[in-house]
Image (cartoon, rainbow, N blue to C red; front, side):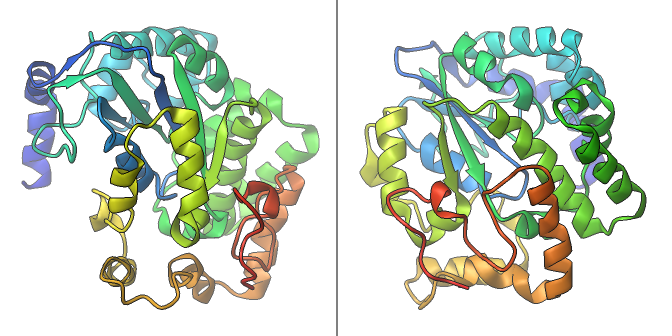
Length: 334
């Protein structure tokens, strides 16, 4: 379908009608899941692994205001409004309607639903845009367990084409969560920084807001461990999220995500080789970004994490620090 036809279809309201009649959702006793991640972190892959479990449907990017259906359903007009007190109230009403089964506009269409079910009692929400500063309260209101997915900020930034929320992070009420030095640094990057530095700045803003509010029952995982050492990570998710069929997750671990078309050809080839058992070193999937930056660029970008008090990744290292590796220390990669 060409872009013009897609836009006409989106504004017609027909997709929302199809979604409404193709799913009957009634909340059950087991928890929903809030998967919080930055864009291009492998979030679709992890969402689909959780979605594979019985009873689940997915709610993909319910706060992405670039989608007309999201703006209509949430009644939020801008990224700045989302971060306001009025925006918070709208988000609460919006999510409550989704969880109660009254609103289907951000469901996956049956034709695109990898694990579409007519009857569901749980929802996995993929949250890439918004709600970071009120995640705990929103999860409690929606009977949801929180999973935070991290990926190396340089890998993420190089994969993104735009950073639509940078202005909102800096110039909305959430900026009060940061000190004067951090905001001054952000202003310098916004004025004179490279695109890589702006991407890492967006990563820092988003993940700092999330990790500032981290609660003991949240599960923090990394894309790198999901690729290299998934067994302990999946075991923890199975226990904390009450997932009844771990065998199904392991069976689908080597499948590319539904949005694999957004990956570059090299990544698609690596995923295909991994699925076929021909990839001798899985680390190729986590280290390919390094060929695109100089050591000086890496050092400058990673200095932003130190300024924002984020210890998940360090300059010169491909993998997260041991604190963010489930079940032991990460492998000794450079």
